[in-house]
Length: 510
Ligand code: ZN
Image: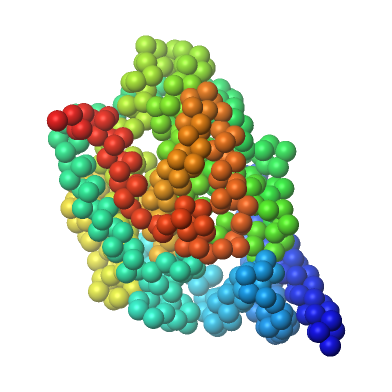
């Protein structure tokens, strides 16, 4: 009897795994076409590619919500031992299934259509700084997001329902506390620093930087990090991203080059390589299952931020790489020494644009978006009031009033893309990056010494061992506890920022 039921359960599990693998394959094909759309697709393919992507998205959704998938899921789960790898896999798949079936097809379609129309409208509106032409799109998207939250369900706040799509288990109330802690420390610190500095953009990062040479340099750095080119590649796009095509065997990064400005290629490439090494480090056995892929957007961002900031904006890192960078660009960098360069890449300067923000001001950009999203979802703020509310908060938190809406409320694509409640995952990533780096260097003090020699094997090894290999097997809170033995907390991150920028701006000297 026992043996028979075990066999039957294995059979159900095998059928389920086959089905999930098929869904994963179709989804990987969709992602490959999407990668191509941003890299090499000729202009004439725009309309046909939109149809192809829509078809593949629909197929994935249909296969996921089908009765057959549901029966296999519940059949398999009944017989699995909790805590086993298979039960973690089925649990993750069940969550995706249950979410998908809660959303009526009509709502999914309406949201897909509204965001497909809103994105080109947003691009045009931003180019002309013309809020009015985008407002009507957001008027359509907001109620659809509110309806999505209602369909998914929540205990305390509609924000929780949408946030959970990107950060399983995260809650608005907890975010509010996190942001209060950050605000209390960062706003006065930024004011103090601004009172000291003259506000000029640092010259060493601007000049003539040959694109081929930039590419050669960043390729060398991410190779040293441990990004595996046999399982990846680097291409050029307007807005850099990283994509994994079904498992650790194909994880691609993209970047952009500005011949007059060193920062974009430098830090975007390190950032995307951080995302990519996470994906490359996932247990290959999870390929084509719901466990392949990072566990949340926040944990993913912790990896990109760790390599971009904790490593890539540190003095230790540049003590090794700056002489090499200088050798690559002797004319543009001239008599700039390591210290001047280090100061330039860490200059604190409140500005309008989130993606160009320094480490100190960055989270305030996220905070203001978080507060506006909460107010929009609650109905406290209307879409038409958004630009004024945006500018008021910019002035309050950063002392900057955007010159126009293009560099204000229109700067991000997220709301046009239907990604409400996504922004806070950037801050979760920042906080977690400091906690992970602390723990890694505590466990393996040789990491810092290696970093000064352009070696990163011990750091990457620690991350693979404690974070990467698990893929989506554990939810973020669980993964964090396992990796560092305590929950997400702002103190180590604030300590890192106060230490670093206090030293840079001479605030620590009594
Ligand atoms: Zn990122």
